[in-house]
Image (cartoon, rainbow, N blue to C red; front, side):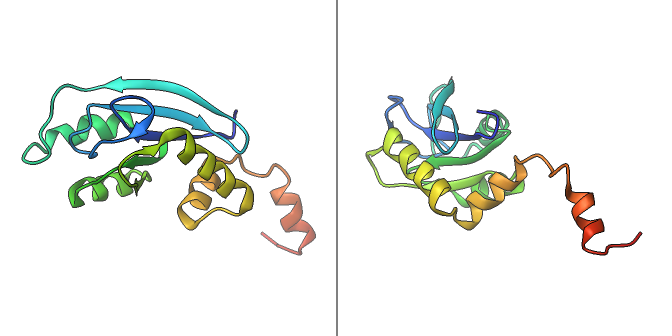
Length: 143
């Protein structure tokens, strides 16, 4: 799964996205590619309130380093700005959204033609084309 994207889900039961980002007690982090998904990590946090504690965000955002997206029920503006700055796409979903269904939807999107955030994430994790300079030369590029 070397081309897989890391995707996080705010969850308490490892089955449903049922948490607000800021007060999430845990995240399930998966590696997801077009055909497979694998749980990489189940990160746990202590009890956190939704408002008034900006420090809680830095711990969560640090955990999500390298993730392409985080799925949650709700998220505040400060968290959105910090995630976007780290190239992590926040995705808001409805209460009771099942992680396995969201993964299937994501895989179907990868196959059918990704949305703009997903295309960007895929390209960031892609290795450069080893023939890119030869192709430029064939097109008539000069130094």
